[in-house]
Length: 298
Image: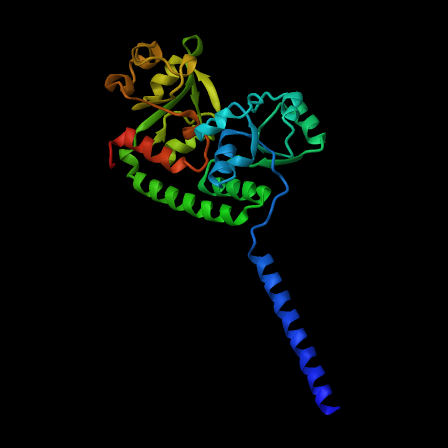
């Protein structure tokens, strides 16, 4: 009888140990597994939002995008629901997303009211004009997609690259060049960037000085104001139309003709999304503008 009792006790102990090991392995696997988002059909509104989704390795989950989403190149094959600031609820909801990731400022507001009322998860990604802001965008998108660990890794890479680019761009205040960002030249008038814009932030990150800081946002300015701004460099987007006159036409404009930039024919044209998106490639934009201002390896 004593032998049977000992055997039964040993068997119970063995079963208990096996069950404990099984539970431990299960808990460990659950803790190490990446969180899974239920959203397979994602609509991305905003070029930098789409860039971050792709940089997180989640481009395959994108079902559609807006017209400002042009990078990486493969996203242009997706259905286009229109410009992020002039959306229609019908166009957005027609692609059947289960999750909408939208940059701050999408609209119009009445369209967003309809979209938010639909049975679709809607996450607004905060705007950014700083390194910290970009990292926050990555965090919000990573959480929404259930890939927080990947977001942490991407944020670390972006922070390191931006810190290095901005450190290399630093120079004495007296040596900094004055930069005029020209948004458009419609009707022969200069629409320029004042303070508080993405263009203003990038110019400062790249070691330059925004030549116009008397107002906030983008505004049409007079010929006299352009002359007083005395820019050493004109910065523009590289697309055509009102956003990008040919050099000869640009420097022949009465408002530009007498500026230091015109005397040296100094103009740099950059991809609009790279320059103003404030996403994963912003360090590249900082280096590109810095090189244009001060020369390679400056």
